[in-house]
Image 1 (cartoon, rainbow, N blue to C red):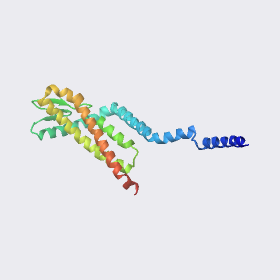
Image 2 (image 1 turned 90 degrees about the horizontal axis):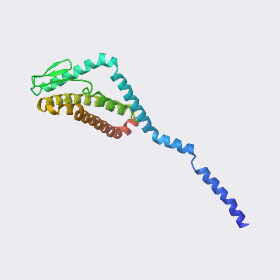
Image 3 (image 1 turned 60 degrees about the vertical axis):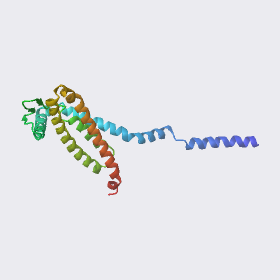
Image 4 (image 1 turned 90 degrees about the vertical axis):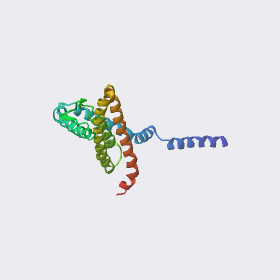
Length: 201
């Protein structure tokens, strides 16, 4: 009889074990809830960048936005350069002097790195109250930084012309992109520090 009682207990333990163990569907749902913010961030970030490039290489941007933006950046860059006594002239997208001339083109506008930053802030899973200051301040900081980059390229062209193409096509772009990522990380650090304050209102 003792042996018979033990056999009856075992199925009860197995049934209890099956009841408490999560199902495959529950595990899948739990994994999705844990990973979905990352997935949604990457999906939204990719969507923003695709939309940006579709506009960036469209005839609408090329014909109506690009000339005004690059001309405006060239004028600001020329003003900054002249603060150092170089006496440059600006004609549309061209910054020139007796020493050196350069034309502001796509890639010099800083829009790609700026859009990387804006997309990363926009799609990050935090409150809009935290995103708006990041978007505004980050955009202004990156725009000003790009004007300094344009001026810096001119200085390189005047004093180290053999390295101009390297700084124009490689070093300048990489450094500006790294700077945009650094601004994003600074914003994340600021946003997490203020998250509870905004959540309580």
